[in-house]
Image (cartoon, rainbow, N blue to C red; front, side, top):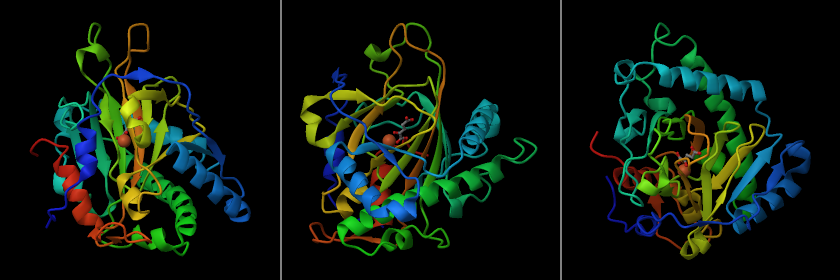
Length: 329
Ligand SMILES: O=C(O)CCC(=O)C(=O)O
Ligand SMILES: [Fe+2]
């Protein structure tokens, strides 16, 4: 199934576990998506420039109503508040990238488990993985609707990148077709545990260890007051200087993943990011976030316009990355 492709992304990641320093010298640009159809050319240039410069950017007026984001967060909190015995009925299926795990993701950068639990939704593979309506009424319907909204926004952004790369505008839309059984875009709900007093970043534990994402494009939803996300652009990785991305519930934070970096022949860089444990004096409570990973369908072939890398299917590509991140499941 997997190829013997040598993933330099993984080799890079093992070097990124150190605490490093903080810098506010990088601008996390905000791009306004309103009147998308009319302003598409202008938006495409802005997205491209932000993606090339820092790789992380935020979009506003993206079309997902704030109430829908808040409802999805409320459901996320309720899901994670279920007893572990209930959640354990829906365990992570590593090969399919779906289900619930707790403290099971060990990043190549840190070698320690992320201080979190997560639940992943990938549409074609959810048989027996949804909590029942008795356990959590409305969860499945809310999350399916929210996943669809995320997909729409991701496709708008990706259509801009397709055009800038010289592909036709529907290129990535076809590659992320939810009607196919090979669909593998994922909505991930995340709960980072409250930090017990005395257990802080210096102890070598991370809410999420430094990593790049596997996918084409990530949409990240953060909650007001629940910070901790930090970014280090790949081209500056030697500096180990990290910039905080402040949560803003009006904005969706976006980043390029390794799949699109490869698909763009490295024109669009993926970026290291991490979620640090709170430091003394900071908010120590739980942190919730939601991430939508636009991952091309398993049978899509990743091959850049200039054919810099040999072709690989998105399925084979993802298998290699997931295998390196989870203990046996
Ligand atoms: O929770 C966050 O803010 C970031 C999560 C993340 O980077 C991931 O799950 O890949
Ligand atoms: Fe990530």
